[in-house]
Image (cartoon, rainbow, N blue to C red):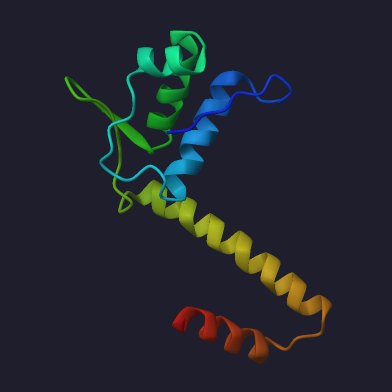
Length: 123
């Protein structure tokens, strides 16, 4: 797990940690079932307080990305989790919205865009 803290970021440190872990879960760098570093270990590794990492982990748990298992630690939830599916759907919608907007700018027809999507899907 790779977490980089920026003092220039507008986000508070706990939010930077949360967003980077969330991004790594969504893009598959952190796999489902993986046990995250303990709160204390992560705090030490990135040079922040335990309170900061605790807040990030709590937020991730509230958002449905991880769960705490006594004696094991914080574990990444399955991608079958409804919340994670919703996050993936949001990403797909954003990507498709960008594709449709770009296609419209170059006067591509809906059928041409559909064929392009089908070709990409089959690759």
